[in-house]
Image (cartoon, rainbow over the protein chains, first blue to last red):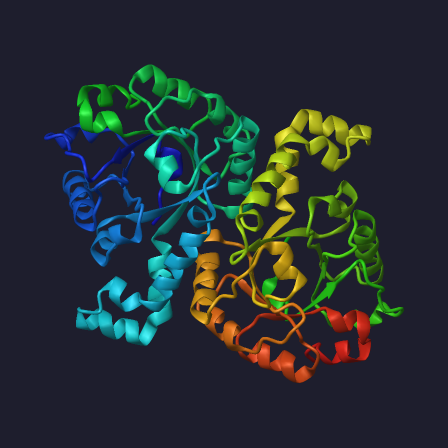
Amino acid sequence: MNVDWDEITHVTKVDPAKSLPSDLGVLEGTDLVLVGGSDGVTESNSLEAIERVTDVFSEIPVFQEPYSSSHVSRETIEAADAVSIPAVYNGDRDHFVGKHVELFTEVGQKPDELLGSSVPLVGDLIASKGVEVVAELADKLVGEGYVVQHLESTAAAVSGVDTAYSPDEVAGAALATEAFYDFPIFYVEYSGTYGGPGDVEAAARYLEETALFYGGGIDSSKKASEILEAGADAVVVGDCFHDDPETFRETIPE
Amino acid sequence: MNVDWDEITHVTKVDPAKSLPSDLGVLEGTDLVLVGGSDGVTESNSLEAIERVTDVFSEIPVFQEPYSSSHVSRETIEAADAVSIPAVYNGDRDHFVGKHVELFTEVGQKPDELLGSSVPLVGDLIASKGVEVVAELADKLVGEGYVVQHLESTAAAVSGVDTAYSPDEVAGAALATEAFYDFPIFYVEYSGTYGGPGDVEAAARYLEETALFYGGGIDSSKKASEILEAGADAVVVGDCFHDDPETFRETIPE
């Protein structure tokens, strides 16, 4: 998956458990779609959401951002351009390294199931080239370094986050992403509330290769601009996409 | 730091708290030296060990592998070719992500101290180019994905490891290193005991870009060959370097 991160300034977060606007034309101008959520999300509604978006806008990259491996299947992997895996710096061990090793252990053991050995040609291919297929699958996985800053959010609860980072720690996590973990994305997540530009300013100082995403409470052109001017590469907008498409449109930079 | 990983087949682990062989000529033929240890190691003996090796063999890359940030200073960073930071997959949270964020938070806040603002020219440089200096410093840091498999070892105790990985989990951690974390090294550590070729075979299957190191109980040419034939890129030899230089010589492939 090659994404030109420089071109990404507006990201839409689609929750597969919520209803989508009847007219998906509102997505015009967004640069990337993330499909994922915690409550009520399944493999089936994830696949449906991915396909509804790609049917209308085939040129917008769509990433599945699963909260659980039960949301992922051969079909979702094939339908999405990438599968983004959160690594939550201020979460518990499971949400940084634990689940990743589990996931890759599973990928390493079951490439057949995950890539569809039911198709004879593919099955033969896997039999002869197991390791290459795993490598190909692994290529679709994109790491996102996360800091979850709103402690009352579901995102914090499901990632084992009980302490928000100070701006200095956010900067440290950003630098660790840029210099050590090499994830292509560093994501400051205020899920459900507006956190202001402070953390973005702290993180932006050390990010060059890494794309800096901010999400949380963006419901106006003014807030979107404030975050982008503070140094974010992109704002991530979710709630109002589902609830208020008109407000959503205002968050897309012209 | 550019290291040609393809050329590294024998690594010497030097413990700064132990006495070094009087004739360092025994290092002839080793491809990389790691300087680090847990008991009795200080900044000062680390620096001394690094300098003793580089004085004799300036062409062998020397990495400092600190167990604590108190082992690191401007002098050690400058004297070593790189500072390698273990990320222990089967350890506790601190030894994967916790200490890394702390370290980079500190690096981000104190580039002056770490890079020696006492030298006026350097101090001015930092004042004018703070971020670039941090980036340069960060460039010297190399991540090592670790699996610590000998539960009775000091390495396990200081990394919060209480469970060894199965070969499938070792393979999963290897694949996570190759496809997700992008550390240049994946290190199977049996610290003090010989673990045999099983974990190396499991990990080698999924590593292409990543260099595969095995350490623990290598005290003969036969064991070194067994590990290399199982797919390791390099064997890491420590104890007998200090205790029995003649045996150490036998572990270096011809």
